[in-house]
Image 1 (cartoon, rainbow, N blue to C red):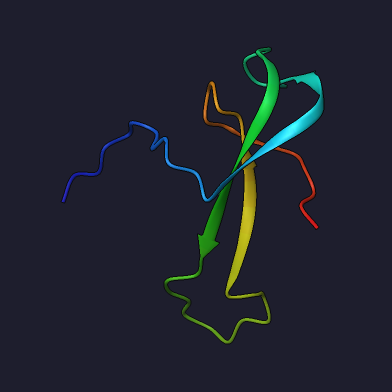
Image 2 (tube, rainbow, N blue to C red):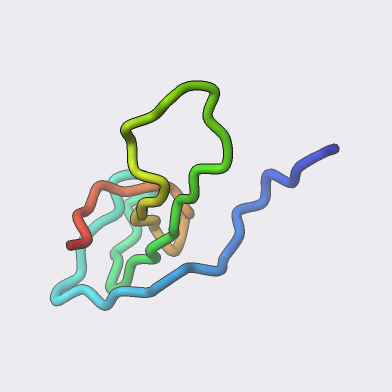
Length: 70
């Protein structure tokens, strides 16, 4: 099965930033960021890591950027 390398544009949530910041990957000035949910689908060992989580992504280049959503 071939998977597309095109980034998907649907986000779990979109957060508005209080002030614009630059993306560390593409240098775009960001006023919003996309939040994408992680779901653990398979593990071959007993894991103490959570079953789900979130990452923050640049809406322009779709790369993961450092952030804390609390």
